[in-house]
Length: 110
Image (cartoon, rainbow, N blue to C red):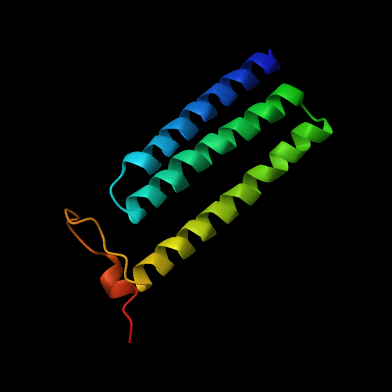
């Protein structure tokens, strides 16, 4: 039973990863692409890791997958923030149809 539920989580994770990668290809600027990568791919990878844990249980493989979930959470969010901030400060423009620039007041250069 746990193997079946684990495979379902792995399938859901692969779908999220696929759509996140599709967003990396289809979205117009670096900020939208990073949104896709951070949200979809991180959630998909969490789901895959949790599915691996359910499939293998409390074996060394399953425990390592479970430990990787919070590490991935912190690494992905910090890396995405650093990439977005660095992109904005280095002058990479938002998409021409962007409605508002929330970063202008937050990361104003002196």
